[in-house]
Length: 281
DNA sequence: TCCCAGGGTAGTC
DNA sequence: GACTACCATGGG
Image (cartoon, rainbow, N blue to C red; front, side, top):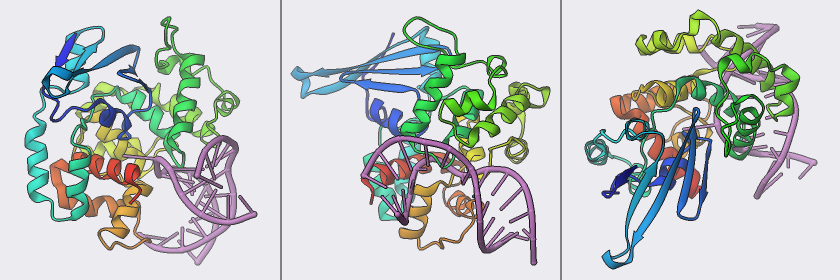
C-alpha cells in the first residue's frame, strides 16, 4: 500500500477522466483501475479534523508497481510551474488550474495501442464498452475482473467477433493490427528504443493507426512527452482559442502546439483536452 | 432528423 | 501534398 498525503498534483478523478485511460470505475470514495492483468484500488480519505484534507491509499500487487504506474517519482511541481510561467493564453491558465491533479500514467504499450485503435471517431462510453467486452471474451478471468487480453489470445478473434463487441468498421482494422502486433516487427522492447520519428513511422503502418492515434500511443504508451495528439477537442481549441484554420491537417495542428510546448507538449495537451471536454467552452 | 465522438483508409487529382 | 466519400453506432 502506498499513501499519497501531498495531493497538490494528484487527483484520482483527474487522472482517470483526462482521457488517457479507459478501464476504471469511480464508486464513491473508491476508485478501481484495471491495468494489464492488475487491479489497482484507490481509496480517497477525507480528514475532517484537518480542514477536510484529502489523501489517498493505493492498493495493488506491489508498491513498486504502483510507483511506476502513477509515475510517483516525477516532479509535477516543475512541469506545472514551467507551463504556468509560459502560459501566454487564457485557456492554458484556466486548464492548469482545472486539471492540477492530472498525472500521465505508465501504461502497457500494447494495451494503449489496442485501446486507441478503438477510440477513432468514437465516444468514450462506447470505447469503454468495447474494451470491456474484449477483456471478458479474451482476457484471463481474475475472479473479480478480467485481465486485458494478451496479443496471442486476440489472434483467435474474427472480424465478426469484434463487430459483436461494438467495434463497428474498426473490427477489420483490429484483426489486421493484432496480426501485425504478433510479429517480430512489433517487438515492444525494440519499439521502446526507437527514436520518436521512427517509432511513429512504424506505428502508422498498423491498420487503423493514423497521426492522432499514433501520437496518443507514443504519449501514453512510450513516454514521448514531446507529442501533442490532435483530436476533435484540440481542434476546437486550435480554432476557437488560437485562431487556427479548420482546414489544417492533424499533423499541422500537432506541430503548432509541439512548437509551443516542446518537451512538455504531452502534459499541456492533457490539461487542455481535459479542460475543454469537461467545461465544453 | 441531423450532428458528433480522443479519425483513418482508399481513391482521385 | 490536398480533397472527398465512406466507414458503425449510440447519445444529444
